[in-house]
Image (cartoon, rainbow, N blue to C red; front, side):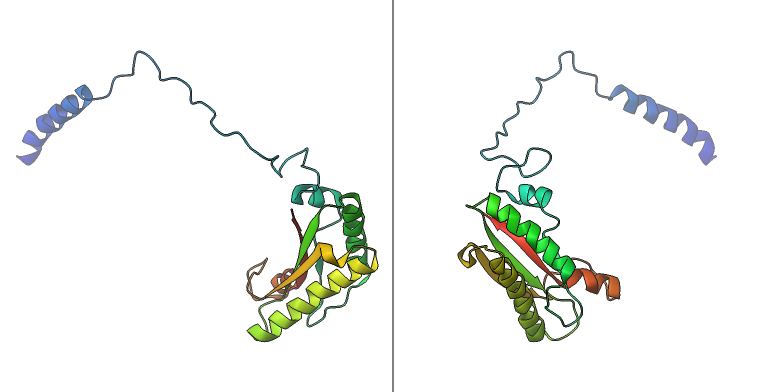
Length: 169
């Protein structure tokens, strides 16, 4: 008995709702106006602004050097990376950098802050030995507070034991 009344009711409801469907407008609204006008060149894509972080990344081997567990020595691979950074800094005499020291999650907060500081200073000292003025470089340690990779395994830890050079304008 319920099916007998439900079918006509369902058909009526469908027809009523179909009659309420929106009709397409006769005239489309105007296209949006591009209101974004950059005041400085964007640091992405080809054509980086000279002296920018994008230019730095495009023209150096890397912005970071990696360390072994509990170490802060600059090995041969790190030396090559830092030499490419020193060459870029020589071509961009107005650029300044901040070198961030990082550690993996193992160890206490205080230990990792101190280790991150030693890593950042090792990179700074090597750049200074290549002729980069220490006044153009600052260091900061984040210890284990800003991991690059999440995880509690050797792969993640290896990525987090690093010193990263950031261009500051």
